[in-house]
Image (cartoon, rainbow, N blue to C red; front, side):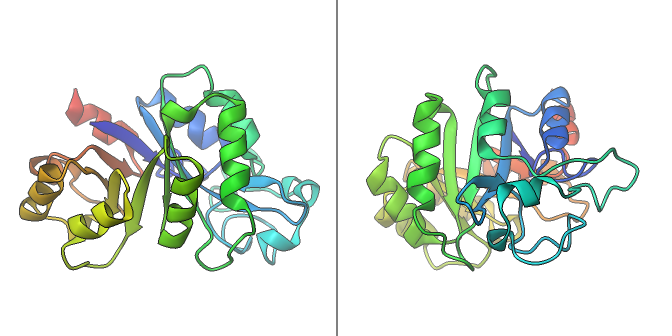
Length: 237
């Protein structure tokens, strides 16, 4: 089972920063999940929200700022005790991850703002670093997943969902995707069994509440995507 660090080690460090990614690996994560947007000058940047206000000392939309403007911001606003962290680029992350035995889950954040050619740009960088076998692409924009799969059939994709879909295993299978990424409260053993029968992986993601992650082991997930990779590592050992 893959121990994914949600936006890096988000439980203890500024989310979606290189510090959070490095600390996740140190804590024993063997997968890292994060979100990508495009800057005004079409650079792939790692940040969760479309707006800067929550996690940085900037204001406004990510897509309205150049990379230089974005990297002048402090991305550790929520963690004032931490040193200043900048918004990383996907290239910076790949430089960090390229020689590590780690699975990277890239969420395409194009559900609210549909970034033109985001799929192509992400795929180009993946191939540049020869990381096709270490990547999972996910999104709440399932049209984007279909576009990505047509572009790169060799790269595994996961259907992100927080609602209770009817027969979700059939939906994911019809889309031609390898994984389903449901929010934890929408999954039980019976639903998980259907995914197993259809040879579809199940990577369960959690919000920031204090969950007992071990409760989901009977679902036999492919992975757990949590804010606390240290806690998951502890019970996996």
